[in-house]
Length: 181
Image (cartoon, rainbow, N blue to C red; front, side, top):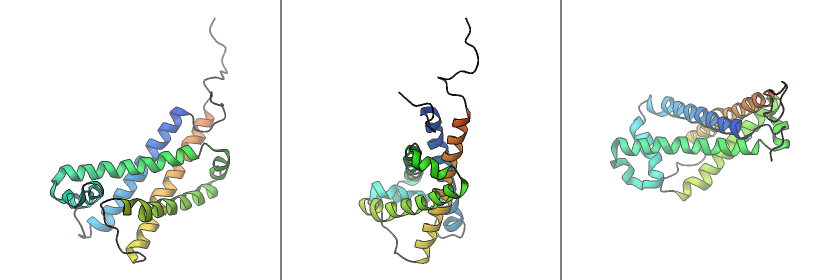
């Protein structure tokens, strides 16, 4: 049985994670395009094939559009997974109180961005067939900043906004209008 004061009920929780994941995934893809594709460092096709390389290995670069689309799907799956994790964690009273005020939400988002970057860089990538770039270079810090500003903070802000909107709606269990007889 769900308590009526839980900030993220099933419907709003699903909406929060879908919207937060889509926003973070799109912002990240936009950042990568601006930082790497537009200056000519890599093509968009090769960029997303590089993501697919995590599961396919170097063969991902031989798969054309199909492996690029797999990489794009993987990119959004990872963004949705991180959003789902935060949406679930935001159900706790402590975290919900921390993100209730904007400064707390921004701090939580920054910390979450660092956690995402650290887990992806030092745990997830080494477990895949992808290769990690060199550590502590300009690109390393650029990626860290991007994870804070365009992944962690947006996920927290979207989850926070949808949680607050869900709290404003009357609970289906509590009706303010008389029931029809």
